[in-house]
Image (cartoon, rainbow over all chains, first blue to last red):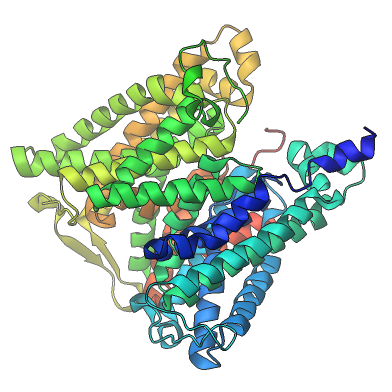
Length: 324
Length: 290
């Protein structure tokens, strides 16, 4: 096999992926009573996918990714309320505003250490939350933005109470973004991102324009997060301050880490596991489920994800460190 | 005017005591510990519960809060934190967020989610006013007490850090761990001691600040940002940096909330982002440090 083929093989569609996606698209029909949670999983998966682009593929630690999620959600909801109720146009508006915000914020993550980036991304999230809280004539403040009525999708499919249309809508967007993201990370551009993640200094030395690459990937990730937020607002018909909360940024990081960082299916796997786990735990102890999430995080980090999903390796003497 | 400055300084001093442990551990071990606020919360709850349930006087509670939290810190350092020193920052962030979530939920479960009230002794309740008009200085006695305690602690810390043998060993370990170990300094013990004292100070800060900052289970999440701002802006190579950053933050926050209440925390966050874009390593960084 020649080298070109070898390099390209990683980016090709595998045989098992096609039935997987067909099953995913059919799931709102097969599990009709669970369409609401399928919709939620698809949205969270999309959100985690966007974090993966900057965290997994570029190595930028961010604790404020909810800023873009909330931005997309609020602008889509406001657009539907004030301008027109068509979902697709509203979706485009949500993505566009999040993209602009991402482009502006990308200036903040270019320099400094991990700590600086954590602080700056978190700060942006908090500023947006303050803004959404204070501009109550526009956003409804702490009560949330109510009275959002969505028009039918493509002029045809009404959003129903059981969430079937919503689930299909989100699933389709997830699939489209996934295909695009896959092309994106497997392109030469994606390869330069991984070079930046692995060693920034060397990447600079071989002539990769690190600053512009970082800015661009941050903007793209913001756009995807905005898409997830817009879906969230449109399918629930509601936007609240909760969208900007710190725990949302932390949750999405957890989701990504459960599923695996730097792997496009990581966000999706993590979203499924996390949502089902959240559903199960919060039905047992609704108030204290954060305790179990916290415990899970601590164990996950101490044991290491690689070993946690391979129980047979627990008894063997661990190779310390390992991949992380 | 002066009153606001005074309140800002009291608030800043409190933030400094709360965050100084974080600054030192972060500089020493390069460990991003988002769970630092949880230690402060433990200190606060120890004080509140001791006072409410057992009727222990306030002044006696402060050392108990300090030593109790320090002990807890030492215990956790030995068992949980140590394996993570050489892990990537992502793992550390996840681990400490997890720990914070657990602390928040446990306090909620055992004590309840309502805000706790500290009954201050009589002699700390009053208020003295000096001067008149725009230059009037109103000093709450408790805030004055906070400033005095925190100033004394700062001087003591500075003294220990610059003059004592432990201080020079600590500074050597911060500057270069491997060389320090090569010179025969037991870096592990230094780590343990520093972590314990840092947690203890956080606990003491939590006990002092319970009345000013408000004590409820979401305390660690609410003030985590503030501690991190102090550390990120002040830098981790000295304790004067965090001190100045904490004072700046305290005054900016109190003044901002007083003059432009509509903007809330907006000013502080924007200020932080601008400072960090301008100087990503922090405002007060020594030349030639790491």
